[in-house]
Length: 314
Image (cartoon, rainbow, N blue to C red; front, top):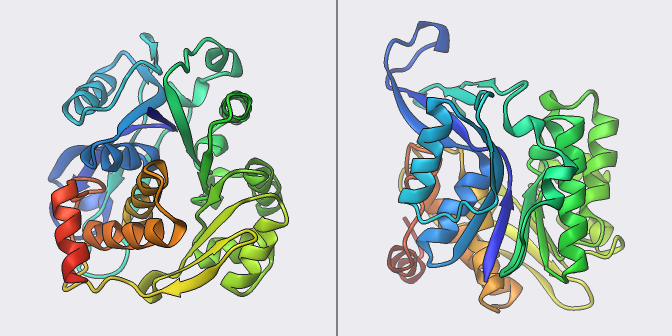
């Protein structure tokens, strides 16, 4: 069964030298977007991701379509916008910490998607939906589209996973961000916040508190990412526990770690594995991803994943 990813795929220009983005002279082109990263991760594990987005008819949109084809990502839910532009971003290079990021996505083709566009999609053969909190923040119409797709998924009894992936800079204010994203999270099968995101969204200071908050909203599975400390998992009415992080010999780039975690969790749940098993896979893929520079090029095949799971380190 296909796994739907709703999001905005963007062009990515990665700096090939350190320093302020305004002074960088050499960039390498790639493709970015949280949901796109998850789609790549799912495809490399042998799943069939179907990416739902809206692409302009420009060279950037064509590059993304070619990237999807190269990564075996189903494009049947990709909408065409011939006269519009596709968003892109710049990503700096740093020797430590998180790199500088600059987005150019306001008014992009993807941000102009509508609920009516979602109504026209053929969801036959789809088995799950994965969403993040990024896409609904792009515009009022993107939020309406996200709500409509979630509603259609529920009508078809498709499990929904949700990664809040907070981007405060995209929202008018924190209160609206919290209210909107918690509204989208209500009743989903699985939610995957980081501990900082969980505190912002729920007001709770502990992973257990974050989990209890979302269980009270009807969420079955809660996974709280704890960075270098691993993660906390909890099943509503079932068990819970902590899991240590997979050891990483050298952290190259932290961007995309959460998307790798999501790809591991979603793929495992789609295969019928338990939440602790899904959590373990997510931690392994997140660790693999931070040992690579690109947002998604390091995402593993199933054979590479099994090797890391056996070794317990990257």
